[in-house]
Amino acid sequence: MRTVILALSLTVAALSPAVADAIAYRLDPAASTVSFGYALNGAPQRGTMPVAAADIALDFDRAAGSRVRVVLSPGQADAGNPIATEAMRSPGVLDATAHPEIVFASTAIRAAGQGARVDGQLTIRGVTRDVQLVADIYRPPGSRDGDLSRLTVVLRGAVSRAAFGADGFPDLVGDTVTLDIVARLSRE
Image 1 (cartoon, rainbow, N blue to C red):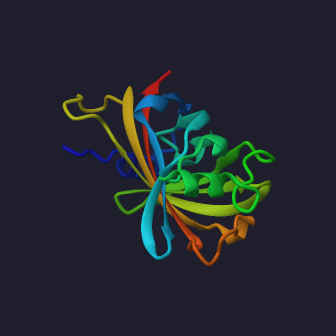
Image 2: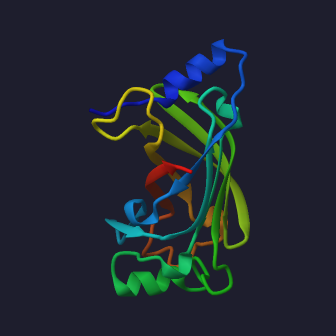
């Protein structure tokens, strides 16, 4: 059964003056996926990008005390086929040789419906823009109530690649890139 815990935690936090320390979590890169979607000649495509580093701390009593910083490796990204992958890594798009990292750092986390909204700054090609992701947090099936030792965080959003100067091949590739991230976390 899918268990959303962040919204409840944020609601309790709004009613409670108590402030607890954020809990540090370790990302399991092998069990996590950072995938993206884009249109190539109008046809939907999927790709993936590996996580190079992650610093994640969640404060279930005070959401504003949570933080996320993730570094991705564009030089190891896979756009779904070899030609698209080479083009994506090229100077006209991600310029992975000159810019070997893509960095997301949260600036605010707050309740939104059954999940949370994560505002942050995304840096691609040395260009930083504000982005917003929608997050849901789940405990593994069968875990006991209140067990926050292992979590799955699902994040979704979209960005304009042109906003970051990654606008090569505009006649072939659409501007909108969707983000679908599944992060498997364990308490440090």
